Length: 177
Image (cartoon, rainbow, N blue to C red):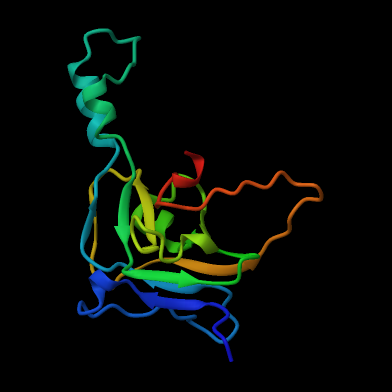
């Protein structure tokens, strides 16, 4: 029987005690992913409040380049990669408790892991969750904390679609190059 879909640990995390994603209950759709290492998710308010205190114009709000570089998402590694059929993808979703308990959001709403992301040259298909912290305080995600879930889904293709011969060479945003 050939492999259809599943998870593997990326090479760099083989000896780091990474747990494979699991479904929490028999009827759960999503596989729970854990953080592969501690990650500090900074509060976006630190940049905004600092800027407001330094601003001399009360009615003007503009982030300079120096502040913009700090106002970004944080990538949390899972140590996991995923294989699946070429007509499937792995949808990454936030845990329902993350916004209410930890003030963490996925800035893109969901993540999409395409089948050709597996074993790509740039990062071996390592899956990351990206977060923005809208809370007042920084939030520390610890190794082993459940951070999100992955759901395998099929997708459909359009009639007469334009087909590219481009192969994936890298990770985030690489298919748009």
